[in-house]
Image (cartoon, rainbow, N blue to C red; front, side):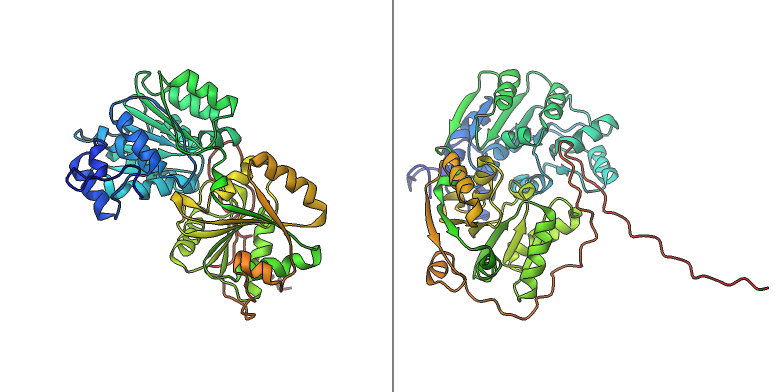
Length: 436
């Protein structure tokens, strides 16, 4: 849906925002003809070189809102070895890689690269040495590359900080400030966040944005666009309720609090014939990418994820988000729920609540600013089927879409850097008896 009514006799809607003709043509090839509200509001100011403070939920189209103007402003000049001219800082590896994929069709000769943990540093340094126009990076890995001399930031003309509130939640802002201090002080800064109530984010705005224009496209919280339900269940019924929900048709995203819980629930669901995979910070990056790809292309219909993935999952047509474990705080609720009802589509969010959790979850939903409807359900209730599409699992064990995990479940907060999978123990040599 277009933010403005299109005039059939006038230029295409994206062209009216000031984007280059070749970019508009590339958008059309991708099936994008009408800008979303945040794009309609932010792109003209970004093209004009203004600093921007944007509040926009995930799924609202903000990647193109900052990415298209950045690419347009960087066009026409050769890439410089080790010195990107555009920089996007993101809190998670998945988000960085998805931004790279989202912008690649519109690069039009510009060189894009991602610098994230969990992937070989040497390979990323080689790309930088060949020259990168726009670098999409997590703070920890980029700090490593700068300290090694593989990247210098004194040629950066425009910087975008995506999901600044999540940067604050993860303790990344000291690194973000260090990186921004290394860029030219007169460069353009574009800061986007789902919420702007964090004092650390306000400090970032005061320190680095010059006379920013503010664009806000949705009332807080963004999660309010979905329909929210609390499902009261008895503890003994919870496993069967989750299994029936996960067996539904359509993409289903189930959130749990711990990596162990993600692996345990995934294993139980597979034993009942459900095509499901787990996603959490303890898995190697290549496995996480394969898992997301399988979820996006329908290889698995259900994904069990921890909160570290809540900001990094950008998959269209997730029709149901399930809080298998209640989130820890209102922000986590908002970010989890933001995986559905994206870009104007409809979606449903359900929280599975046992009796001992009722008061906690009710207060949390109120703090998140969402209106919830409560239901008491059993595994075979018609209400459960009507709300979620729940159905009986196939029953036959489902083969995992990838080899069993060998990764150590040890996420590291605050660094943004990847960690290596634990090596298997060395093989024992056979015992030989010594001849007498």
